[in-house]
Amino acid sequence: MTSLDDLLRVHGRLTTVHVERWVARGLLRPSAEGGAWVFETVDVARARLLAELVGEMGFDDESVETVIDLVDQVHTLRRQLHQLGEAIGRQPAETREAIAVALKDLRER
Image (cartoon, rainbow, N blue to C red; front, side, top):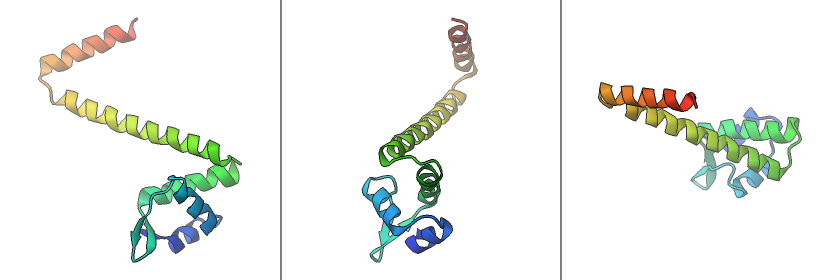
């Protein structure tokens, strides 16, 4: 868990205004402990990405939201594909083989 002060220290270009704006827009989702924000590891990494998009790449707020939404979608799809692979791996050999054949047929179309 990372405090707001630690987050600002780690990401030297960030200001409280940046973080407050991103929290208000739902781009960062800190929890509150004793009235202060606390950031999970994922939010610290997300803050780094947001800072790069805004500071180094010059993205505006709407573009940043679009990029973050796409990143979230990619992560969701990766997790779902991993779960699907796990579920397929738990099936009997004949079912796994049938799925492999079906995938091969689909690729050859």
